[in-house]
Image (cartoon, rainbow over all chains, first blue to last red; front, side, top):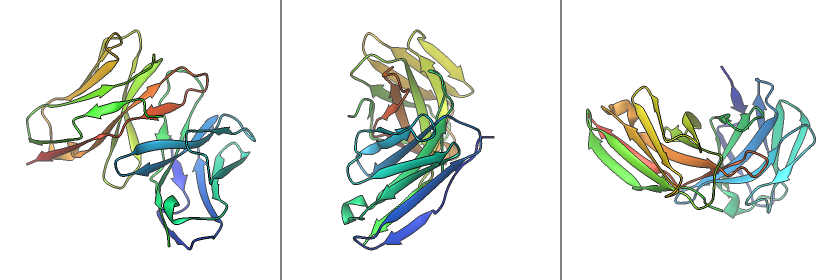
Length: 113
Length: 112
């Protein structure tokens, strides 16, 4: 079974802190994604990566950056956390091809105080 | 940008009843997928239907796709309490990167 793991289930940070959210997948998937999920807004794509060291902006990249140094690991970085970044963050991965599903991690609930 | 929009936002039924959720979208798609999310957890893929397919079945799930109306429906037959979850449709708009655009979801409550 594909396994996507995220470094923390719950995280509490202070405004202005630098925050790292880590995601690791074990199925050699080329594509990895970061979403945030907020009540009433559904899932919104922040960034994605289709290969090592490659990254593309999603719908809401402002305030975030990403890093993909190894194929299995995709990191989301909040350079200076703000309260409006309090949210559930979900990582996903998928293999290449047009008709393949995404596999999601359990999510990280981030609270910025 | 939001592509899929689910309807209704919330649905409450009794065990054994059928649950139907609808999804509308705006642009042409390569495929449409349905996912389930149990409270506070990650999403789990349920079923994928390609743009050239009209209906697909998987166990108690039945998905239809009408590309002329840009809409899809998910039917769960003989619902169980364990089906209680949020359900999301997601569209792949064939943009080159196979990214998905998710709707806001339908929250389904199945009471024993």
